[in-house]
Amino acid sequence: MKQLLLLLALTGCLLQEAIAVTLSSKAEISLLTCSPGTELYSLFGHTAIRINDPQENIDIVFNYGTFDFNTPHFYLKYVRGLLPYQLTVAAYPDFLAAYQHEQRTVYSQTFRLDSLQKQEVMNRLIENYRPENRLYLYNFLFDNCTTRSRDILVKDLPGKVEWLTPDSGKNFWNLLDEYLSRSPWVKWGIHTILGQRGNRKASLTECMFLPDYLMYGLNTARYNGQRLASDAETLYRAPEPDLQHPWYFNPLFVFAAGTLLLIGCLQKFKNTPLLTTTTLCLFLFTGAIGCLIVFLGAFTQHPITAPNWNILWANPLNLLALPFLLRKNIPPFLRTYLKIYLAILVTALPVWAIAQPAVPMASVSLIVLMIYLCLRLRAKRTKTNI
Image (cartoon, rainbow, N blue to C red; front, side, top):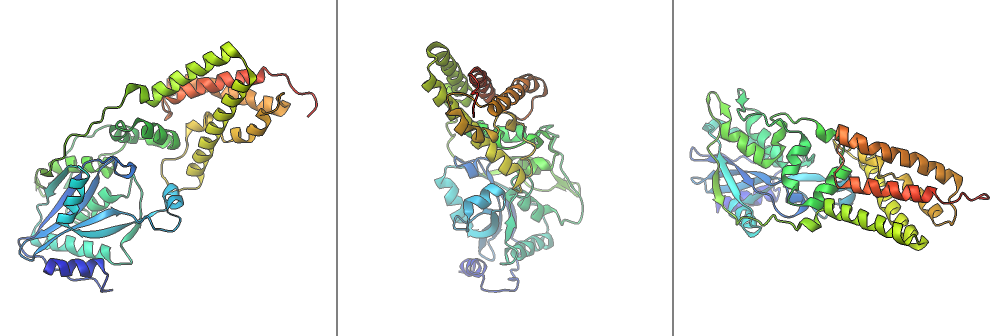
């Protein structure tokens, strides 16, 4: 009954002042780490904080990873990196049941804190849950449910926490790709719309924006010469997911095979409708992606969306060229644009091979196809009178 009243007080915001909750000596504070799911927002896993006090009949979970689909202009704010996330509270059995339903493994690591430190963590969580504090501007790499949970637990400890996990030496792309490999098309899309800054090496603590890396870090973390948390305990073991994808559905194969097929057909049949249709589709596709790249790089709060070298092939100016591609003869200014665009594309291939910018390998086939189309278009006669 006391747990129910506590949840009602917290969830219903019945008090504007901080709610006082005194933990007993039996209380335990643990970090919950949930394995990745199948939805885009759950591909990298999840982290939450559990407060369990059997003497006071308290067993609740504080969750920094909650957002509201009913937020005004939800999708626009999500794309711009301005979607507010919030701290929510749930009963532990309900939290665990939700992940059992999604068949996602849940681990627990109990923090080795004294009674005063546990009470201070509880007080900070309640303070964070006040209506004026619970919302925050989510940043996937640097301020998310995992970094918030870590900081609320260890940031204010009177002493330095030693993270003894070996430095991974990985950059942000390496870290993301460990999870994106299960969704090859999502991987291609994210590598396309995000930028070169993802190649920066992540420090040991920066790696802990991922739930698994925080869990591994806690396995070796030391505080005052002692272990900060217990070994990870499995609360629920989900069946191993089937991560196999047909090789022929991978974007690398689809783009490569599609490029070879289209070039072969265009070379063999050389009919204008096929060339026009292919050109319009590719210029529309690359132009639309280019507009998205410009939008994410210039008008959002995302930290690694610029610079983005994919704009060399996904050029937003391709959309402006669309109406003139329908003409029988290519206007001189468009021939000039195609000449410059062609030079950029041809230069991009050796640069990609040598410098290894953050451009997906699958997109190389698209670059080759666009080079071929530009050559075919420039071969058209210039219209003398425009």
